[in-house]
Image 1 (cartoon, rainbow, N blue to C red):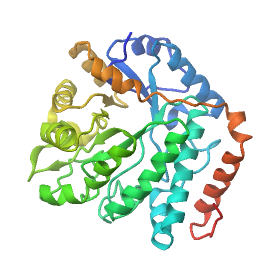
Image 2: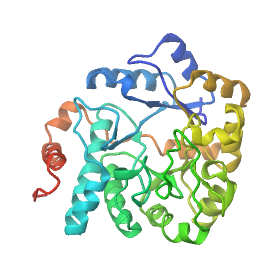
Image 3: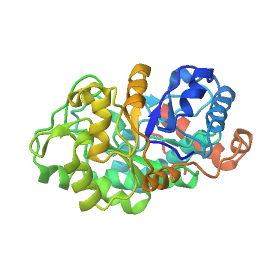
Image 4: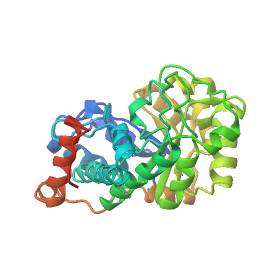
Amino acid sequence: MPLGPLMIDVQGTALEAEERELLTHPLVGGVILFSRNYESPEQLEALVQAIHAVRDPRLLVAVDHEGGRVQRFRTGFTHLPPARVFGDIHDHDPARGRQVAEAAGWLMAAELRAVGIDFSFAPVLDLDRGISRVIGDRAFHADPEVVTQLAGAFIAGMHRAGMASTGKHFPGHGAVVADSHEAVPVDERRFEDILLEDVLPFERLMGHGLAAVMPAHVIYPQVDARPAGFSRFWLQEVLRQRLGFQGLIFSDDLNMEGASVAGDYAARADAALEAGCDVLLICNNRPAVLQVLRHMHDRPNPVLYSRLARMHGVHAVTRSQLHHSAAWRHASATLRELGANPSLELQL
């Protein structure tokens, strides 16, 4: 059974019987995990194996595991510093900044792949304008050229560990104060300014292995009255046609307040698909998932199947193999020391 266009969550640390049945629905294509799904690396690996065993081809399993504030699994995983740390290092030593970013991308991906997780929704490509509460130190830098370099290094590390990358939040969430989890942010800037600055990292990295993009639940009224994730202009005319992006487009969570302008959950799903999203995330709201499953129809989509297939993780090793490798010991020690004191002159 091919994978479908919905990515949903599960409630606990093991699959319930009703969840197994839900995950067999032809419209479901993946599962996103949260901190509540984690007790230990061993438990997490068993949960991921159970999810993968439900379907063939296996469901995708994803997580938000960027580092800093957004790292779902803590105990048993290396603590990753926020992306801004790499930007601060770059300001003093660009080569070292890129090296540390690449090491962090590899370590993040390798530890997740060792428990079977296919990918993390990373990296953040937003610009750190010192405005956005929800982005903040999740951004590498304020300069789009520096973001491109550091995120490119992070992506290279992810790829080396067998993980596809997802750039977020297109076309840029860094210039608004409001958090789209709780409000509907509005960015009043001109299209030309957004294109020349915030879009630049997305455009540059499309030629360097960026496999997927997640649009922002932000309205840019001088461009379109709809949030980017519901905008054919942003997703079709700009991302697909002007920039030539051929990878997967994930919606941001349709349960966020920033998505409420599209209506109820069925209307949000319709609007996101019509705009050009390939996969819809619905998190922490099982009634909304059921509403959308009742509403949507399963239609064959070979292009979607091909794009989804490229998100499966590869090159997995066991945790024991990973932890006995010199590469892991070196990278984890580097990131631990860096998290404790970003000014350390570490030898990479």
